[in-house]
Amino acid sequence: MYRRLSILLVLFLILGTTLTFAQDKKFEVYGLIGYTFSEGVDVNPQEDDELGIDRLSPKSAFSYGLGAEYLFTENFAVGFNFAQERSKLRARVEGFEGLDVTDMSVNNFHGILAYTFGEEDEAFRPFIFGGLGATNYSPSPVEGRSIDGGTRFSTTWGGGVKYFTTDHLGFKGGVRWTPTYIKSDPAGVWCSPYWPWNCWLMSNANYSHQFELSVGIVARF
Image (tube, rainbow, N blue to C red):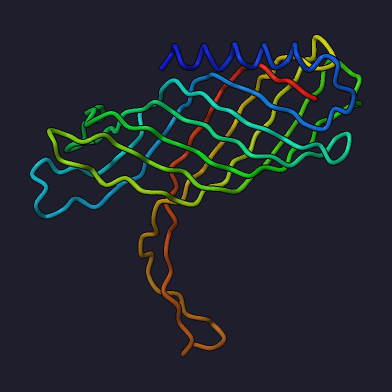
């Protein structure tokens, strides 16, 4: 894993140096490494579950990401971001946290809209972004038995700073929050005070949250 990540970062460095002669800076590509703090959701224990598991969570862990953006103005860009957290599936058993069940990859895929402050020739440029996409949970088998993962809708929001050491190569650091919809629990019935015969079933949405801190290399051309 670390060897592959090192190779990717070296490729980004090579890409940045070979783009020195490009004139129109319409694209940015970047590679990031960091750490993701994760939380899970409460679950209803199954009748055949002797352990009494009542909460499942991804374990906070090392993460990395890749992305590309197209700048359609000096400040606005659209792009795509992929991020993976090398996590473990954790369970809360009878009130005790910290049971690591198996390895699990948490993969994020998002289309994003980004805004970078300042002018193109400035070295130091803060940025913000938001996006829509999906989060995929891929746990490894346990003793030969597969565990259901799944893909859920998620959004992603964040910001940070870019510092360009040349016209085409720089560094990037930031924070990102990714809430992922997991399920909805019943929350009773609500009836209109004006039309008592009109009632609706209510529900509470449950989200798994990821908070990522990352740094990396950015190249533009």
